[in-house]
Image (cartoon, rainbow, N blue to C red; front, side):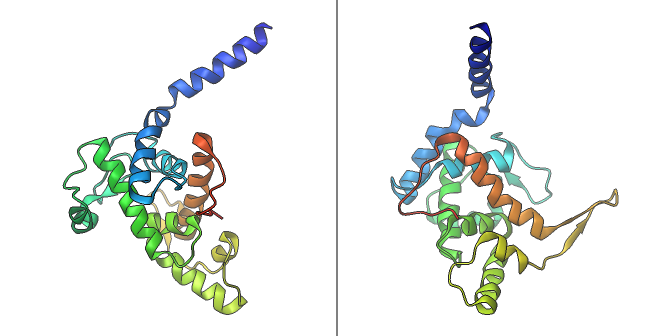
Length: 196
């Protein structure tokens, strides 16, 4: 009996300590406003978990990424101005900007599957070229994530300490992490939006 009590208590404490839980409703509202009420907003929560650990921070990435969704405002400024977002100083503006940028990435994506749009958000539209190569070579319409990864040829990033990481690994792990984190916050099947 006591063991069950402590398991339940520790589960509740973990949820309480999860700062992303505090943003679920705000992410939901922003994504519903931009995409409609059938959008699987929980991936937006997973995205801010991946981007910032759900912290309203300015990144040390050297390009000025900021906020929960780590948006580089100078890159998206003109686009966001058209959406009446002039600053990322509030969480509300950050999450609305995140949703609009995701809508833009969805339009850029070469596939209707959401994993592609999330990878466009993270690493630009190179994933589209990888999917196009796979389509041409394999003669298939919808290219699965793992197959597209096989066609990825990007630079290897070398750190000052000598360690290296492949940019393909970074980008292809991103959509997997967004999916896994997102499932924690309200996973359901969406009839309109497929992730994989």
